[in-house]
Length: 435
Image 1 (cartoon, rainbow, N blue to C red):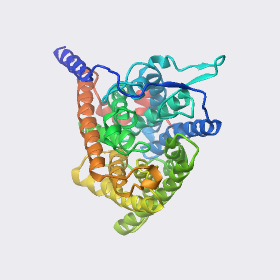
Image 2 (image 1 turned 60 degrees about the vertical axis):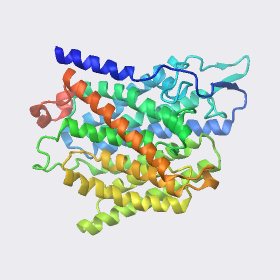
Image 3 (image 1 turned 120 degrees about the vertical axis):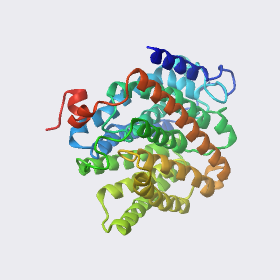
Image 4 (image 1 turned 90 degrees about the vertical axis):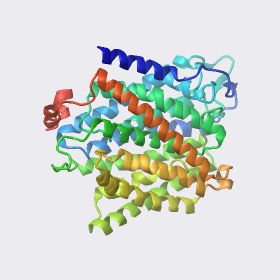
């Protein structure tokens, strides 16, 4: 009992660390200037980004686990989608994107209060970041980012975490890590936003956050039973390739949609997304071919995802030359981190959430500072400023993730038992199996 009381007290202290809300960022406004074209594109982008999680990421991860854990892996992505939808609606969006201070937003949009379309008056609430589309569209577009980020983390601890603990962890992590970092980077008045950190579509907010949280989770939970002694080949690489293909297609909504308009910047973001992804897939494939003598399906799809990750922060700031460089570097570096680094340090990042998303996000964020073109994004890159953003995200995410996992381990326990893990999470946690 004393451990439980201690954990609750520590959690209260963590929550209290957020400062009192205060006015700071520009207020939400009403406008009649709504672009039908921009709105249609953003609604399409929203659907594309949701498609990245269900079914894209769900299938990508499910194909890489063993047969006895396929349904449990699919279930994690689907349940997270439902959970974060509710949390974002109730409080997440308000704390991330409404006026507050440099560290956290306000409470103006709790339960989306005030987000109205007044038909008789012809007025529509909009957000300062999206003045040509309804605020409701901006909100749900951002919701899809909040959904995929915790879903990415599950790849690091695949095949061994309790489903109940996973749900509680993802709820707390989303509110205490994702929401504040999203406010820092993307909201007017957020300290990284004001400091000039460039993150067009989520290099820090989504990928570094998810990758670092995944690494911490893999270390805290420990290795899978039999890791390093038993073969753990992917169950179905067809599922993984299909899922990766869905991620590639959906990523156009992720990156080009982050222009929040159907304009030239969105077009360039789409171009560089395709270019960097193709280059990274070839880069990983070449590195693997040289190192192992054969190029693999798992390798080329992993390389493509690494390129998608790395170009994300840079998509609205770089040209094709920068995209080629980012793809080339990220493919090779992520191959090294997902193979050599993981084996060297002996941590069990099951599906390379850190190796691809964490490392790819860091590489992309830093290279944005080198390859940003002022004529495209309106700003010049600064490597040191980008490094500040990367460092702050890594440190904050790592500390809070570690605290949350340790508290939940004391209160609920993190892992299934060894016997349950050997039997498989499909049957143990969900009473179902793939025949």
